[in-house]
Image (cartoon, rainbow, N blue to C red; front, side):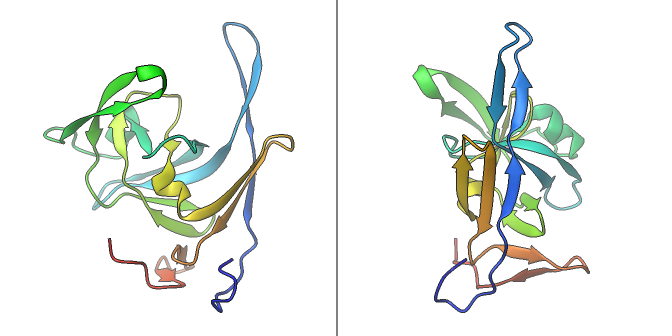
Length: 168
């Protein structure tokens, strides 16, 4: 991690891909996933589970039902249109600021949108940019090595930063 900057080195987090079997064809797929706790802003709740790691997604996508379970009030949130592959578009809601993700004992900020259910939350570049991510399709493993500005969750619940995060 952050060679030459005098930062503590961490063992990368390693997670196996998740096997998905198509209910229609029986075909088996393997998706890069990781166990992530999504923490809502303010007094909102948190949920933990496997999430899809998607290098093609600019933003993290949280399904509406997950946002509701996190006690996020969806009324009045601004709408935007997101474009997906093959010209497919969808209207989503801009999530309020302050979302965070915890993977292992690392804490990263999120800038999610809220929309339809893809089976689980989808973590995009707003999450992945905090890590050096290595996807090994043959071994069906993903490795996340935290960058120097990632917060580390301490045993008492405080977050310690290894470097001062850059101003947004």
